[in-house]
Amino acid sequence: MGRILVEKDVEAAVKGGSVYAAGGGGWADHGRMLGLAAVTIGKPELVSVDELRDDDWVATAAAIGAPASTTPWEMQGVDYVKAVQLLQEALGEKLSGLIIGQNGKSSTLNGWLPSAILGTKVVDAVGDIRAHPTGDMGSIGMAASPEPMIQTAVGGNRAENRYIELVVKGATAKISPVLRAAADQSGGFIASCRNPLRAAYVRKHAALGGISMALALGEAIITAEKRGGSAVIDAICKTTSGHILAEGVISRKDVVYTKEAFDIGTIAVGSGDKSVTLHVMNEYMAVDDAGGERLATFPAVITTLSPEGEPLSVGQLQEGMHVFILHVPMDIIPLSASVLDPTVYPVVEKAMGIEIARYALAAKA
Image (cartoon, rainbow, N blue to C red; front, side, top):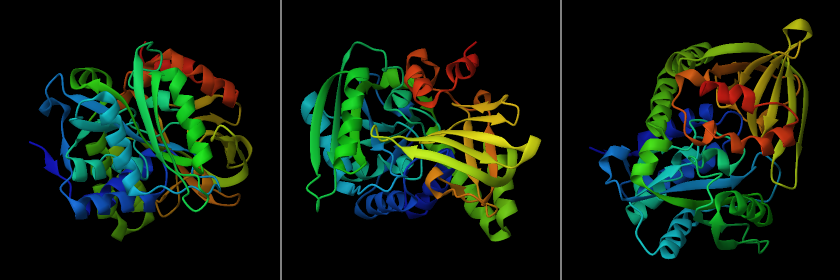
């Protein structure tokens, strides 16, 4: 049976989602707004994909952009609902459920408000357990597919006349950049609903249980908070089966916002032969040691935590801060078809100037 999501689940989703945000994943306050609106206005329901019929339609609810930057973004709860409605109109059939492309500070809750208002189920599956820079990485194997897809986007800064609604049809790889351009035009962050697929396909290709993993992690964090920061960090490690890879003071931050709506660069933590380098493309994509040896690579979970155990986004990091780097290896988390798809890596490797695919796809070998 499904689980009706209630008010206490909102904070758990935000806190657990913030760890899986891996340095990106939106804004915690935006997540709280979406979740509280949903549980106040209706009864959003979390269901396993097994509760759907094979031929039920399931689409991905997502937010696109790099809101860690200083852009004038504005996204309202109604934008997520409108994006779903536009997709249903274009499809000509009702959606039974929504998955999310990734967990994150707000993205874990992307499907809740449409569920409360339209009755679409919040399906307990994700395109990727953790947050990632490109839509293709959460597209559950559709990135290289020639099959035409439907994607919608809604939102924008109303005061600056940046509000946009668009419906695009075509191969995922060709239309995903159109949505990213729309995100930039709208102010840097836009609500989207995309890639309607049958439940049978989702069952086979998504990372199943991704939302309940975020909820369980958030519950463990909330329980540990009264015992202080180190208890929170211990609870995060225990619940995720991860470990602290490194800790130290940020000695250098070199991250820039690009016109493609990406934050790209590196962050150095610690000094001398104990130092490590975090490679950033919106999220933390890799960690190298002082000698340039690779310690962790996407799709593993890589997250910076404050000494209080608060997950910090790339935008919050400043030189002189003390951080702990959490690593949850890729072999202990459910992996979706999209993170094992070689076609999603070249664009990221080119933008970052480092190798990722060789390490990421070793999970498949």
